[in-house]
Length: 91
Image (cartoon, rainbow, N blue to C red; front, side, top):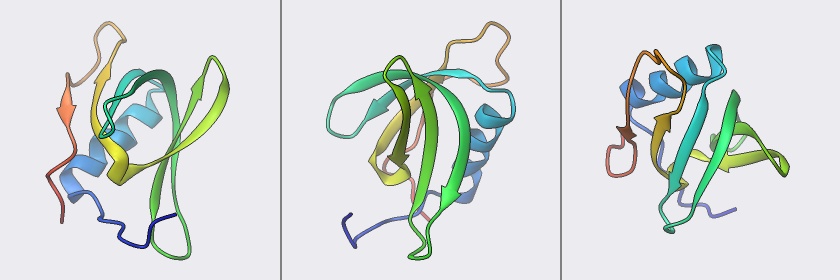
């Protein structure tokens, strides 16, 4: 992993926690331009303070470093939020 991890702003981290709590199916946009669909499972923080979003995709579980996330959009009807831009908004 890169050592240049930049944590998300706390209010944006809350959206990821809500997505995990409700197990939302997310359209996830990454800063490299790629996209994936996955069910939000949980978040985790490593000993080196890097934060990850764990999602279940058609290919199995994936661990996505949060500073590589550009945006998330819940695909569930009645979700409590819409598209959230994550990149460029750091603590």
